[in-house]
Image 1 (cartoon, rainbow, N blue to C red):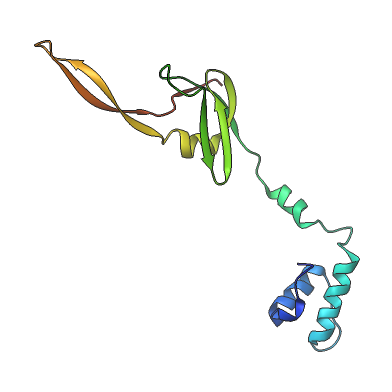
Image 2 (cartoon, rainbow, N blue to C red; image 1 turned 60 degrees about the vertical axis):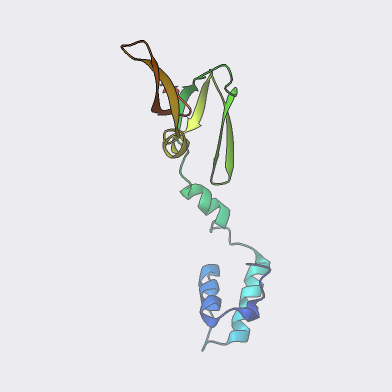
Length: 144
């Protein structure tokens, strides 16, 4: 919030920023003194005993769980990889080799991807009838 125009903030936002920076004002609340104190505290930089915002986020960020899987090809015309886009991240995962895949990608995208395929079924009289079956779009197996 260094580059924000402090004069456009509400008094409650100014007070929250004062608390966040650890600045205590003497006497009754004065908006001009409060904004000057915030500017001085921001210019001085973070205190040595406090963590930066990014450090605090990195501590809270959970470790990404991964599983080893192998994606299988269904036919000769299949692409040699599986493409998955999820929440702004793109993954190109090669088929037929052991790879690490985030668990949330397996749970939210890969297992839910199904398609209808036609399979021939021979009848007693020798005729062929086509049946539709729901199959996994990207078949895979767990390695671990």
